[in-house]
Image (cartoon, rainbow, N blue to C red):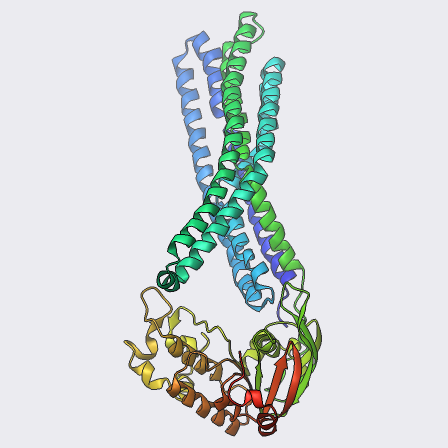
Length: 562
């Protein structure tokens, strides 16, 4: 039984917490050692200068240098621990996170979780977590200042509170503007990426001017929102920069008055000024990291929600290789993110080894049906059963061995041709060559610069044509001799030679007793299947033997519109 999301997350959290406790321990001793300089100044002014004792000065200096050196070592060790803490979290979550994302049926919404993990990891190894580790020491430093004299403690406390309030008001005022600006910039960037992806169409149709103008309008909107946020943030930042030296001056001025009135020593005055700087350091660091802290907290919450909800159903035990008997029961399904059903109560069955062609007009639900049959999308009601077992009951890794799928939009992955055909698993060289021959692409692969080891889908790799990519994807679908294969528009990018090879593939699959569902509009492929299903507006318009269907439905005899 696979480990569920919640236990995976809790295990990673426990490991992080144990290491974070060590980091907090280092922070405790480090902040204690930060009292070295003000205490040194206090002793120098109050003892050494008044007594004129050089040996005392040398002894104090040696001790102070040793303590500062120790603090530097602790700071270095703490930084290394935080880097390893971030790596520990990544190692605990990255593999199960990607596995769950690849199995998720809500890819667009869950894809952000990778960015969330990167943000949390970056926070743990950056200045943000250091600010949080040192922030609890602010009241300690204020108490030490108060111990020197209550007036100095009052000035320091009031100053810290005022600086914190200014920062919080600034953050609250600029937050929405920054979110708006970020969203507009992301929208503009995605628009530019789509324009670059379709650069050929852009050049051919002379669309560059219009696209650039539209992109520029989005950028201007983002810049205006960012400028407003920067202006408001700059106002509060200027106030903070004014208050900081005023507070320091107030401390020294008040200290001088107390020294003149013989209520405090000069050493205490200097020590109080140094302690004020040290007390405000974690506060200022925390203020500077407010936005990062807020975004990281939200990312952590999203990760926690992802790992603690929507648990994977437990599998009772591994199921045997299916024979390929397919049963579809009253299937109803919307497109993910929508409530309007695209598939409306579809039901049919295929015996093991039978083949079915699904045809229909555009937006009739053909590709949605293909995704439902493979278990890529989940229906809102009804079921798809393979040898009597609902495809949702199968473990995805297990079902994938017995399932072949060629999507309408072919996607290969950066890597070698061999790895793409072998689904990036353990490579069976003989099986790779067999399915490549079956897809009639073996000779083409051998003609590539490095044969089956040729890199594809990379910036420096070999670029395949649309038809070649589709045939490589077809070989991938055939790899491992699956019991059930779904081909969505497998002939979309094929020439006549490729189409003939596809016909031969369907014939071989029929001889191998492999159950096949092919979505097509070519009459050539309709003659290679046992049954035909005509979809119209998400419903079955006709289902029956291929010969009878081709005879009775005249408008599918030549070509059924996609």
